[in-house]
Length: 437
Image (cartoon, rainbow, N blue to C red; front, side, top):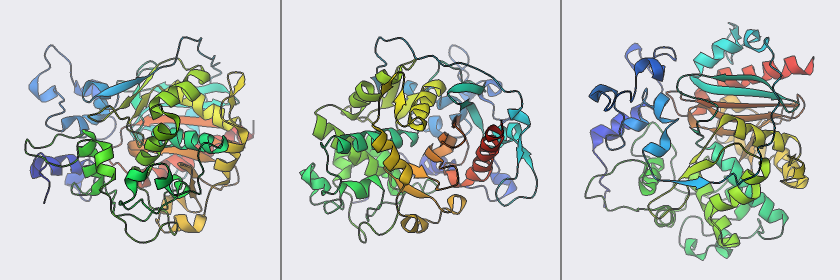
């Protein structure tokens, strides 16, 4: 039976924001023209009808409204708090470098140079921070972002929970070589039934799941409907929570043969954390990472209709708190005077996984990469590795340059394949500069 969603017109409207422009008519507003402050979104009591952003009509997830809503997500959908605790925030010392904006590089496939400052607009940057040797050397907030306002992280979330599963494995509480059904027997008749935990961690699971943001009929949308993140028709009869959706996913092909980016893999890892520890994945994130980092602010995570945290992409936090996590990973898991993540776990993440498996996904902007424990591993000379989310969210860690870059963005195109061409060379330009200092 075909599931009934909001309406085909609304679906196409929401799907259009993920599409790659193909003509002049399809070209989205520039970063300058779509500045959410200039556009006046949600100003007034009440705001004018043409400046109001809503959940029910899907406008909260439509460009250019997303340039406002990505910094106000909890005003549209249910969320759960991730406590920072009562401890003092760890100190972040600024030592700003005025030369960063003028650094130049060549975007992938281009012979025209671009400056770091120009790249911010090209990627619809909302806010960005660069750390070098633990000190903030660059920090900029644009649009409606501030240092105290959480921003949607999307799939950067995956790297947090992948790291936590790796920690549980290091402690002997999870055996990543075992089938996921050893821990979650409810998945026995699903496409995940004969997949191992490690295959989920590295996204080499063969299932029927299409993560195509340009197609409103794709599985990623059905997953989002189950989570309650898009409006549905009154007679919708599909899954209403993540658990009910995950058991419906079917197998396609063999496990362990190729990398395919599939957010449902991470959602099962969130389920695994709760099954093994007895606590929700987001509570474990608070206790085992967030409080120990000495974060400045509580984070929050999107939840489905029964309060299950969206492990695949629901984390909202501030730029500086992401930077603390990135700096901890750069520093072999140690931060704020303590070993938060075992060094062995960080070392294993940095080693990466099969590059030949990764090649199947045809990420031309990420040649030579692999994907391991929910991290993108570059295998470049600097050993860079990344937590990455759609629309331009990034924690980019370069151990050789002793550098961490954190960015929030609201690019009109979801997939980062279109953003990498200017982002990755820009990051390398800053790394090269810092290594010469």
